[in-house]
Image 1 (cartoon, rainbow, N blue to C red):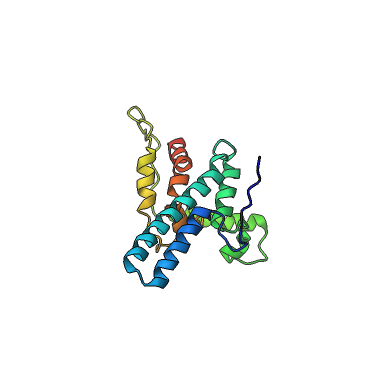
Image 2: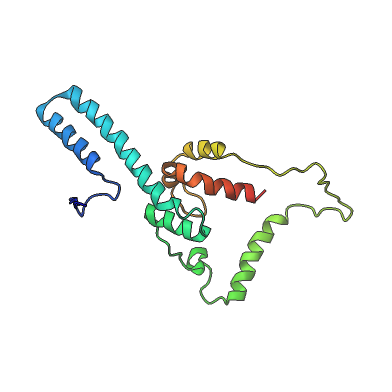
Amino acid sequence: MPERSIKVSPNDRPWMTSHLKRLILQRQKAFALGNNFMFKLLRNKVNRERKRCRKVYYKKKVSNLLDSKPKDWWREVKQLSGQQSTRPDLRSMIRFDVEDSDEGLGNRINEAFISVMKDFPPLPEDFNLSTDNDEPISVSETTVERLLRTISVSKASGPDELPNWVLKSFSDILVPAITDIFNASS
């Protein structure tokens, strides 16, 4: 079987293919020649092909992890998106006195959560919550994908500090896992 040599530039993105490179070269030639019609046509082709290549690359990278542990799956997603995996120390995030012991810090956090509930009167002893008509709520993948695509990337991220552009850009990859999480929590 004959060997095939492929040039790979160290600056290339991992999803870069020879077809995409050829399209980019054609686009640049059309631009240099001043052919606006051809340039715009090739510009659109390059953008579509780039998006397709990225999608295929990331799907391939993460698809084999869907059946593995969620921890491994999320680690790979975070690594691909460039998110740092280290978490800061809890004491530095809360900005409490550094001299507090772990127990003292836990009590302060507990008091902060309990202080919110002080405004509400306690429920009567004979209170009975009926659960006869409760049915589990299930969410479809299409609903989750539609919601992920409508996320505003200019808004602040949630408590997981995962950037909104990651959720929006990689929604097609994240949908199965997020749907499973939503349906498991109901």
